[in-house]
Amino acid sequence: MLFEDVYQLLVETRFYNSQLNKKFWRKAEFDSDIRDKLLKIVDDFVSDDLKPLIDDIQLTGSLANFNYTKYSDLDVHILLDYSKISDDTDIVKGALDGKRFIWNLRHSVILRKHEVELYYQDTNEPHIASGLYSLLDDVWIREPKFNPPEIDESDVSKKAIGISDTISRLKELITSNITPSQAKLLYNKAKALKTKIGNMRRAGLKKHGEFAVENLAFKTLRNDGSIGDLIDIISISYDKIYSEQATIDEDLFDVATKLSDKLPEIDAEVDPNTKFHLGHGLRGLNRKTQKFISDVHRVDGSLNKKIEVLKTQPGKFICNLSDAKYIQKHYVPDLFVNPPSLESPKQLNRTEIKIFYDDGKNLFYIERS
Picture 1 (tube, rainbow, N blue to C red):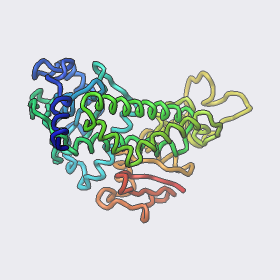
Picture 2 (cartoon, helix red, strand yellow):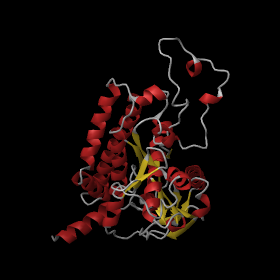
Picture 3 (cartoon, rainbow, N blue to C red):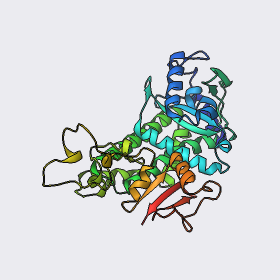
């Protein structure tokens, strides 16, 4: 039997279910309760300044098709015209990918035993999918047909790239100066991601065979080194949980603050210039009861917290879209038009802080040496 014949036999007999997932569909009608919840989640996820730019909110992937497994995600794509945000759509993509990463770090929403995955997508980017449903309009854009499937390499690539991006961001965080409590959160996230990848691959192999998208995506991640990086992240984060190290973060900020509230957006509860009076009892902001906060300890909400931290200490931060807009407004007017490179960074006025754009990672960074 020829290879093409073996392949066709596998995909025809093992790739599809006979109907859409009954947890979410009644024939071709999507469950209204789940739809309402997904739209509410999107409303919480998208910032107010971006909401008017939403062109559509779409459900795609295996749960909008016949090739789902019990490990399939509810893939929700939020369509925006990136060019309406900035002429440099690559920068927009990097900023929005960063926001998505932080959201997923903070939240894990499960609906009927399936995880919700949110994605930003450029409206102008072609989206090839045999099943595509508009949650916003509650209608099929492209209703799937039960036909012998052909594995699309773009499906494999998209699944692999999404996971690889998360691993890269976890790797960057774990190599930074973090506290044991932050390392524990990253350890748990990395372990959960490793388990999810394993479950995804096993389900794909069991249901769809060697040519399953999940198995091909796993092989892509293994070949490009992402799986190895994830294993290293788990190992490094474990070491950092139990290693004793005094960090400047612990001196300046409450060590009980969760990572989701601290990275990359640091929520300083005290003025960075305020010193703790160790050995002299609990005074000032260290008192267990505090009836007022004097002006010297108040945090100016109009300031960018990352910049204020770097004014007092060396360090490096990723800029999200809000940070970049703040810097454009107050320091570098042509930031998006003429982004500075690592070789030629721009200084933020009279501060010692510099900003540059990493083209490979699609991210802005601010740094003070």
